[in-house]
Figure 1 (tube, one colour):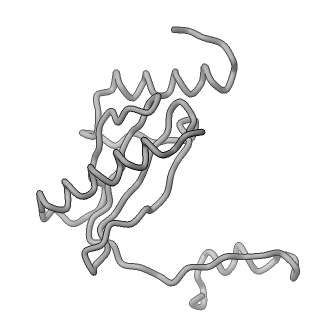
Figure 2 (figure 1 turned 180 degrees about the vertical axis):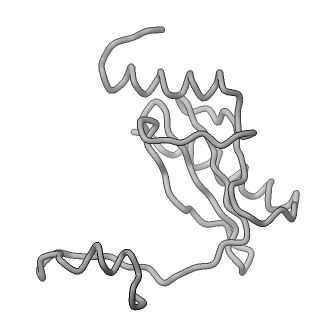
Figure 3 (figure 1 turned 30 degrees about the horizontal axis):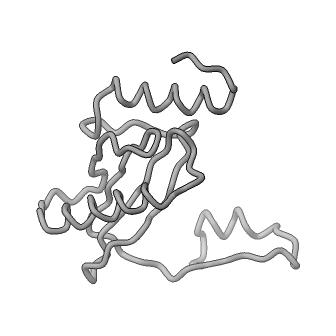
Length: 131
């Protein structure tokens, strides 16, 4: 890790026998968040600073998100899938976020759908159905 990197500072006190997985840095040209509730994609929004649009990449990302949502068998009721396009044109997973710790990106899905996602996850966590 580079000198002064925030992660280096945070990780310096880990016990010597802890296992730490590190990946090589990658460069994303696009990053998107997909909101998923009960296995259904509610919407998506782009959150990177690049405003160039490419419908081919958008179709690739939509397909990848759909396939990931289908295959995530033990998924929480509400969550997000963040995907990106690497500088070599490949689609890659950025991260998956649980619905209880999920920010809302304007223009990604309706506020009503976002609220439904949060409620579904909260009901799952608490065991109470507000349905």
